[in-house]
Image (cartoon, rainbow, N blue to C red; front, side):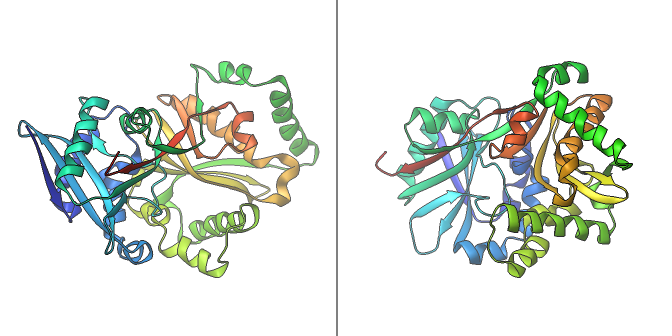
Length: 335
């Protein structure tokens, strides 16, 4: 027998959330309790911006919890969206253990729709390979698909390098040769993000914001910069994730040429932010940074992938990335 409970306070489901999340083989740091803790503590601006209230549904089978569905309920409407939408979570998902399957998930949603006054559930940014992603596809709920890019690493750096195209390998060599020819000295730096000085964090954030505004045509200018610094969950999480977030930086003649922030997962990295300084474009600093980071990763071991997240920009495929799609699903009461 299936039982569903409803909560509006994350802290009331936090313990069960952590237990389920730890048992999920496809888990993402975006659904970890550490990350959701930060989102929950700083959710008031998003509540106002999205005009929605968090709701957490817990599903029990034979008195054992099998899934938590975190949602946002739009004010004065019967419409719901996955919690984390437009509020700092790169990937969205339900929380479930390794025992979950498509059939069981279908039953959960069926009973939820019957029991609660819900007209629709919008489910964006769900990785296709997850149980929820497979459920969305099987039920025909998919309304859109968007690319994310992941570099799957072999056993050695040499194998990785040989897996790149001849043209890419030549371009990497050219970048290093140009720096040497021009008398430029580069340094590769890795630092736990929360241990960076406030000055350095602000410098990197300014670089990221400038890149977003110019290259990706972000709107808002000063407002976007203030949002990125004081409200964006990706920024706020830097204070709380400890060893689970690292900053990788490339400097040329002592000046930042490129950097990225990385979330450290059990077997890989997620890179939510990457930015380059265009005045160093002659040396392809983004490519050099990724190459140095991959060499560093092989030296440390225990990393099998680098998730470059949303988008299929050319540099991602050039450096060996493969497309792993995200699906966008829309469950309606009459589905």
